[in-house]
Length: 297
Image (cartoon, rainbow, N blue to C red; front, side, top):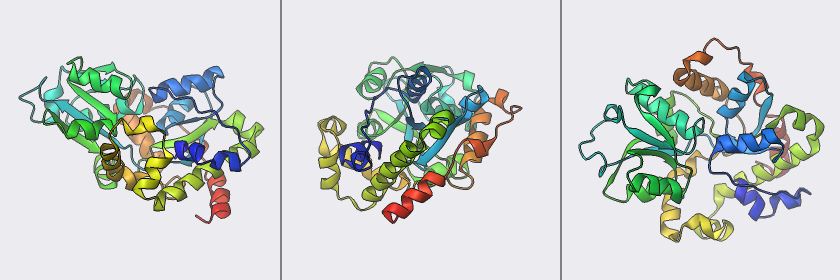
């Protein structure tokens, strides 16, 4: 949705000149906002929770994804006898970066299999082809990543999907409730100082979410940058169709979304269980409500 809002000119229609800086992991994007290199961020919602625990006020303005769109794949060349997640004890699991949503998801998968997060070694491998090469070279035994990388690996006989979060049902089964994923979030100070810009950003994203609901495959291929296709149009569309339902239809945070994210976070980071988090300050639906009125969503 962020790329579509940019590529299709929805931000320009709102009077914005947006510069999108891509980072190989969500945790690195947060650092860019903290350092002042970026004003706002699109990344996993749980970063707003972590920031509040660290004493920083960040707030989600629009929810882009209502499931993490991630999967955990195991290399059968590295672990030919792999049968269950418990077999990953003592192994190396690739994640985009430590503290990222891929790290959180992989940690939760281990926890549900009865393993402590420390039972495996998490290795930061970045994203895209860099992550793909880390698994294929044997640098890691398993990889938690998004599509289209996981669909590409899944099509090969040497990778087995051990945990899947790329559909609403699979995410509900794993998280037990609505789990918000990617969102547009910003420091509260930015929102207060630049309310009009924040609303314009929300308008652009909600417009993109609406466009995505009825877009045909050909429309999507034309809209995204060529690099997204990884040289294989069919692979990209197969991956997109797998996760299409997990994109938000309206940009709203579900009533139980923030609480679910906090519960998941504290399960894999028990030290946060005793920390008071004010969930009402981690998101707002106000900007989305106005955007929906404008775009009839």
